[in-house]
Image (cartoon, rainbow, N blue to C red; front, side, top):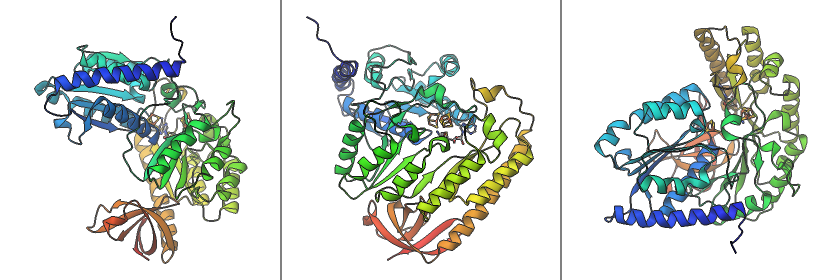
Length: 472
Ligand code: SAH
Ligand code: SF4
Ligand code: F3S
């Protein structure tokens, strides 16, 4: 009688079998040492987390990693589709691989991620970049070993952009974590919100949450590995667990993670204002391991624009959330995303965004000029404002935020912050760079041995928005 396996189990078994086959093929093909893979991820942390799973699978296949493209036997670009600029950069980088592929035809060139989940992109790759060997989308992660096997055994062009997946939560995949002390932990995938400008729901599919059990198990592994910080990831973490059988919602998940023993902090992103509840803010306030940092993208300060964006909240409800957050966590650090030049936005409406950011005083902002994305509603909206005008508004926004951040920075001089020491500072020898709970960077002189630990730093100087300090 045939064995019956659950879809996930079947997948795990197939992954194992293909991985074994690949190891054999590679040991024959590269008798002088392990083949090298170059992996580069573009886009958000969710994509980075996928990249770590792909690297985990490559490791099990027998690859080692290199930062030098020219010496790689396998080149994998994990792509992002969020704005046109992101896609242009990737086309440029793919084009730049052609001479390499000409001189070493054996090199495998693979593209994956959000940008590849779009039919028009795959067509363009087939037509204009025929040297690309493997293209797969965001749903194909668990099929990666099978796809690599097909390429290694001679198929010239392998494309897999199907949306079906026997393992839609990517459970059980090995993970190659790039940092020892900071870990990404996906809690959910996909998005149901269909903000009218955004491509994510089209390239990542519908929302689906991992079970609390799977998340807690991964968190325990991460903590046992010595991580000092875990960032929970999802496009809208506030809808974590909606409709899940175990009844664990996001605040409950935070409390469960907070209860795990160990010396670590918990961060999360991204929160959608329409689903951000007072219960979540109360939970952040009462869980000592949860960093007091909230990334709450507002996008615009104009109610008409917010409605056109399908954001489902108003300026007033947003500001009320901020007020409540500050009342339960006076030290909370707030960051946000802004889109300038949404189709039909007027200068007066843009000024409402400016007034909102002045009212809130965000620690920092991620600012973008609207970029039309194929297939989204906003791509077909009337967009009369010229690009040069939008650029002027954009500069105005940046200047306003710089003033706000400079003022905030000045207020921190003399105060002591606990930071996670993340590495050497870029600009100065024997200086370190640390990040506060509020996601603010402080550079200070110190020994490299401190990297990966927590340290207390007093801010001594604020130059614009760059903070420098001293160890205490
Ligand atoms: N899920 C998150 C955002 C993910 S995308 C949320 O809902 O907040 C990150 C940011 O990119 C968005 O917040 C938005 O500010 C920006 N963005 C997304 N699509 C864009 C587009 N078409 N043009 C310009 N900016 C865009
Ligand atoms: Fe995009 Fe909106 Fe979903 Fe965020 S919530 S990923 S902006 S559709
Ligand atoms: Fe980009 Fe996909 Fe993330 S489009 S921002 S990599 S979800």
